[in-house]
Length: 170
Image (cartoon, rainbow, N blue to C red):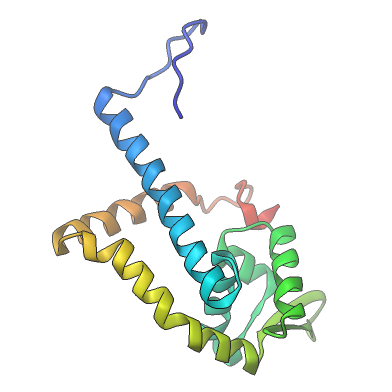
């Protein structure tokens, strides 16, 4: 939420009424969408949305395996959060860790056959939930504009600088 604080010595660049409307609609929609998808995945597979995303990343990777650092970067999460998630996925038998032969400190996350089967059973319901909640509500033109806007925002928030403060570097 954007709050107007008039005590500042230098006047902030406040959102216009239209920008405020757009910002609040975005916040409302993303909160509801994430909750909708999370509930669907909890109901159908007993996992949160973030875990599903990790399983998808692994399923799409060569040999169903990724370095933990690469997986954190792809998922846009901290290494600590990833480590906790992978521990839970290991407990379920859906993922296993393997040491990296070329880097003693590095590890791979590997999708197990059981994890691949869970993903295969869960994906149809998840795709239906995404389609119903997002794509079925937008025209083809709105979908294209939405995708372009999200790409521009993501690129702006993910600097390529070596010292960038990004979740997977923390």
